[in-house]
Image (cartoon, rainbow, N blue to C red; front, top):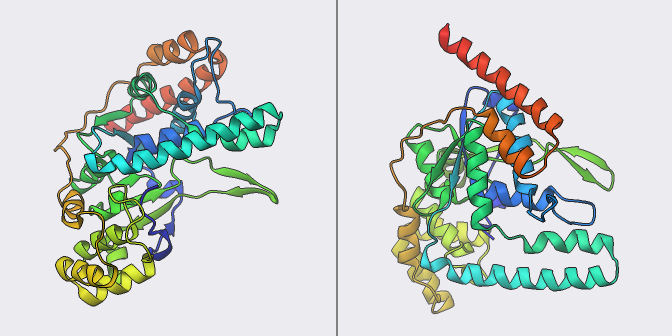
Length: 338
């Protein structure tokens, strides 16, 4: 769901070479759901081992992150903690949508509609505790730092950027921007090529900078939070009916201060159905920790145990990727030495 402000923010394409030597704080759940959705069989079935354990997320985390590390990018994966009580409505909406997709998938399965199965199977993805634990285990074995957020992972990732421990947040959502994250990079963990009807297209990373957005829109950070609330966040899904990004922008620029903005909205639209002050505080003072990031040691034996022994990945393919990580480790050691 997330914030729907993509149409009014400027972004610029960046090359992977521009990110060499940089550390990116990745919104872990955002990336893992991408892998669970995209790394699948033609009929939509996720990758699984012989005992039925889903491995799509492990495949995505391993191969995609080896590619990013090979570009000279350091990675921190930030995992969500406890959900705020106000996200309850969002979870209800998402669960209802998943249930509907599951029903459509069953219908497509009965009709042997492979295209339908592929389409609908992506709509009821579930990430359980075991998958989260194994994701953390694999990432750390690869030498990638793992941070457990007390609350929203994306807000914690933004805190790492603001504290100087990371260069940018890697996510498809915009929450990190609204809490003042200096830089947001989208498409970082997506496949670099996407198949379309007319052929393959290249998917480049895109960067959105907080200061650039503020200057471009002519608003303050507080006004950006108000704009987000008006169009809808995970804490008030749907926002205010009849107000889209452009109307919200005009309104926050006209009224300026949060209290005046929402007084005007109530005067025009009546009761909001949510407490705007409470949501404003979530973004203004996010639930984050002053976490000191520690990068773990690269452990190739652990990688093989997780992927090859436990989940039956091709030993040859895994070893080829481990060789790349081994080479990167040697290069990093040399750069430190000299």
